[in-house]
Amino acid sequence: MNPFYTDYAEYLSRFYGNRKVQKISVNAGFSCPNRDGTIGHGGCIYCANSSFTPGYCFEKTGISQQLVAGKEFFGRKYPAMEYIAYFQSYTNTYSGDTSRLKRIYEEALSVNGVVGLAIGTRPDCLPDEVVELLARLNQYVPVFVELGVETMSDETLRLINRGHSAAQTVDAVRRLAEAGLHVGVHLIAGLPGEDEERIMKSLAEIVELPVESLKLHHLQVLRGTELSRRIDAGEIAVPDFTPQRYVDLCCRVVKFVPRRIAIERFLASAPPEMVVSPRWGLKNYQFVNLLHNRLNDEMKLNKIIESNE
Image (cartoon, rainbow, N blue to C red; front, side, top):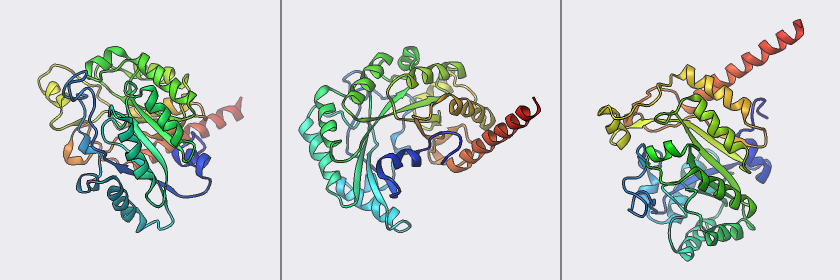
């Protein structure tokens, strides 16, 4: 058990006990409403979806084929592994056709060894009929809905061309939780115009909601994005996070987030050749080790202080 916070492995054990479970990313070919003209064009200014989508999601066209490829990749090292089909790319409830969503999700669940669904989506793309569909599937396997929230500042949401509001986030989380679904939230640290206090304010609003998990990562400026272009043009600026400063922030986050909420990750990890900044050269496990060492040192110091009082 992690002594500092509820990590993702502990969170999954609530559903699967001691069984080994791994996410496999799936690309179902969806778009986003801020890309296709429904509410805007171009998508979020920082987005380069290919930066976090595994290659097999582009090489294989079908849902089941992608999952089989993912199983072959992970199964070589962990033959007893079971899997959560992770619909990761773009907005995976954005269809306008609930029957199509049902076919896609059920195809994923038909693959041997798939024991859950993780659905990446937006707060404004969850009509009641989609929530009802997910709730029905949740009666058979755990369904985790991961909401790209990024910030609770409407000003920042407009600046990054997100296209939804903080109020829509609150509404989506509550409706999902009331339907019995397992709600996770994504937040980004270091968005344009946001300092650490603004990040913590977003976090404070999130932990008051019925969420079960949190993904936090630092903003990466990626080549070819609108964010990179606007920074080069001097139109906007982003906070200059060093690894040290980001560890400091994550320590605050860990101390603030209640144990009932799992923290799944702290670091973004786009391919190095795509990253303009920050170029830390740290893998996720290396950053987590730095964070744990810092938290452990603080714990030891506090014990020494308490013993001398």
